[in-house]
Length: 297
Image (cartoon, rainbow, N blue to C red; front, top):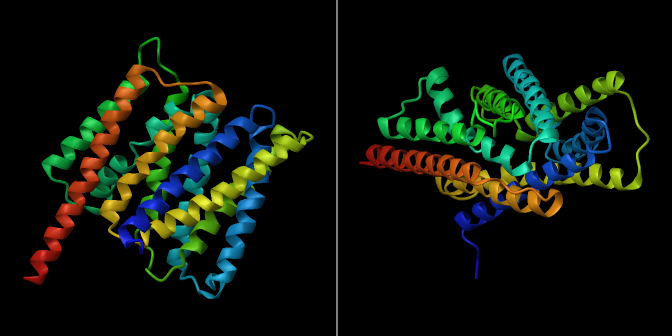
């Protein structure tokens, strides 16, 4: 029985979220014994090599990049560098599931930022969902209480820079190869890692450490390829909500590898954030369908 385009997109999105979370798990585990910048630098070699081969195989290097698009890719890459550093620093000190729960607010933050920067219209329903989602994040972070973790603020700052990263590519011309965009970010993050090792120092690497870094790099590539493929199959409005499966993977892997489980407040806040995000995505899907129907009539 042939697989439908929607189901194919959903499966690739789930694979992407699993791969990204496994990459995070490897990085959190290896940085317990290996300096952070060294791990970033070594993973960067793998990701740059993989994405470079992809760009070469798809002919991306033959594309002549306009100067304006080049500046946009540079901005995206710099934002990716800062978000990666903030995220991994937070990951060093926070349970995987707790940090993942905070990151689930990203689709809501992107929707709100797109309205502020590009003038996208947001109705009262989506605006309410966004506010409810941010309230859920406050339940996860719980500022001013004993459960407050200051590293959660780094997680929120990471979200802010990911928003900058995602919105910066919106004005890109449609023919700009996605492999070229991703490769630019991978190179920037890898360079940041190698520069950081000059200040942080270099430590001899054991076999298990090397295996973890290799696993992180390979799963990072799989995550990227799967996410791109997912967006090219099926209805984006149907496929996108499956991004939230990353939280399930984070809970399972966080418990299996590190013995951490999120507390009740974190789970409740994450449920609110995910629910608000799914509502917003489904609402956007319904509005797109209504717009298309109006144009056809």
